[in-house]
Image 1 (cartoon, rainbow, N blue to C red):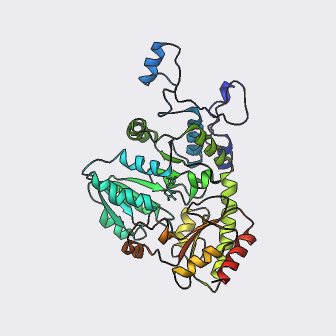
Image 2: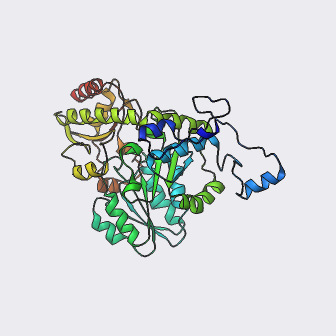
Length: 399
Ligand SMILES: *Cc1c(COP(=O)(O)O)cnc(C)c1O
């Protein structure tokens, strides 16, 4: 068994890595991964305990620091992403927060794209400033704004691409170049792309964060997150923060996520196939004012999306003709698609961002972001695409 432990080959394709990487079989040779539900670890001797605490001997110390089931997930995701190392976290927000907070201090400056997930927006524009960290929000699609915003003390640059819910595409290579000129690190929230469709580290980013709650679980069961980057950065900056502040992932959730990774590519490619069909069908509906999907030629950054993503993702955002009432009426008329703010699930889910995920940001900020009262965000699932389209059509007809 020994020689097959931590089975990870660099030359494997993504699908093989998704199934095989990080495998750490016990003496029983079980085919499925084990869930190591333990908080602590016993040592053969006091000397061994001392050596483990000193980091001189390999092995686990406490599950807040690391756990074999969590490690399987971390190694598997790191190998798919093409990252040197990974740490699993309890939620996506724990990953975002730890990835920033572990490397920032009072007096530092952060530049971020304005188009953000609601809680990311809270961390950047409300929480960090409380600790003396200044943030500048820019229109992420405008390269000149990034150039103007970075300054000598800019330590981090943060963005999502595609962004939530307006699906703006940010030029990862160009923004990374600008950030690196002032010595800032680039943190990308890659949730909407997933490790299957886009790998920001290959485009010049330094750190990638995920909410694994979304496509990686993809079946609505568990919350989770992950932070990926260079081994040195993880060891020197992230690990001290991670070990002492406790955002660790639970072994059970890590096991669910490892199994989620096994089918991720299959699910994502089917979701992308479904999403383009749904987006095209919505474009031809007379009750739809506008469809935003990176795979449609009408998307303002269609060419850039083709360059940095291998396919266009599972999220389709569209605006209904009329008012908020019309949008609500349409949601309420759906017979199959669920009204839910989650995304990346095997079930198609739809939400009205202005009154849910982006309710807490000001009207002014919503206007700047283009999150209108008639906008809905659809996470296309794994149902038969003709049933998804049929449900949308009958609901749109009713308004
Ligand atoms: C959901 C989400 C998060 C937060 O993840 P949780 O697992 O809910 O904490 C962060 N960023 C993006 C883009 C998301 O969609």
